[in-house]
Length: 68
Image 1: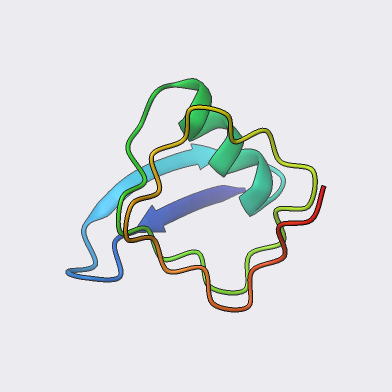
Image 2: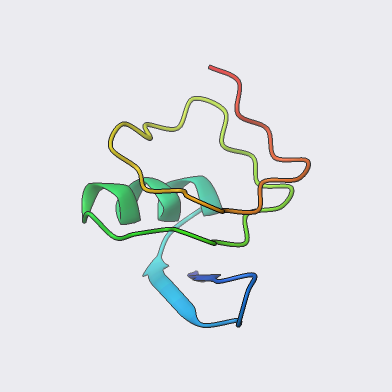
């Protein structure tokens, strides 16, 4: 399915991908060196996501699950 990641500040599209889950889309964005600064990721289930090198400055992660 098409997953889009938008900025919480101005709703600008930061990244879109065909992915099974938001976690997969976030990992693909990180792998592609896409900045996710100010990304709206509230409530995202990112358990076990590989986020090494991710740029998440100012990202909204309220209620996100980040264990592992």
